Length: 157
Image (cartoon, rainbow, N blue to C red; front, side, top):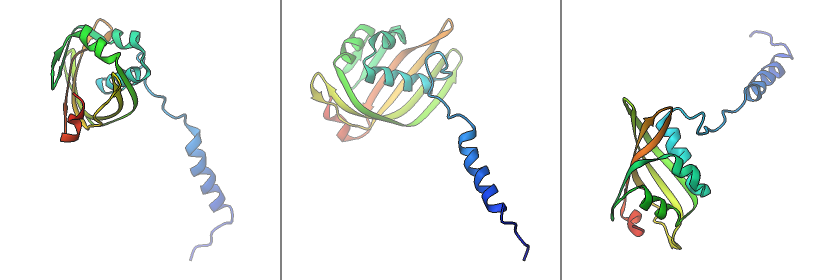
């Protein structure tokens, strides 16, 4: 059996634990550092939860079309709707991004907790679709669609 030195174990522990703190944790994306539709969608939801309406508006295209179970909304109607939303928590999963030239299509599921005009939001999950389009050096959402993934998601339309 090979002879081990008493310093081997402490050296391994220092190297392993040191590796955990040696590199900085990756910071969450910001609008200036985001590079793809997944980050754009996540940032948009963060801004909606924070009720940062100027930032939300900045990232919705002037030609935005939103499709929901009750019909369609343009940009102005969507902003009016969003201003009645109070999100306390949400979780995003199953995200997939498909690039297509100057557009990026993103699909995902989301579960949301909160209210719309004081009424509880159906927690979901909801199946979501977003289309982001490059406009100059920035990206804006031009299509958003959501539908309940299960009967429970139909509580709030």
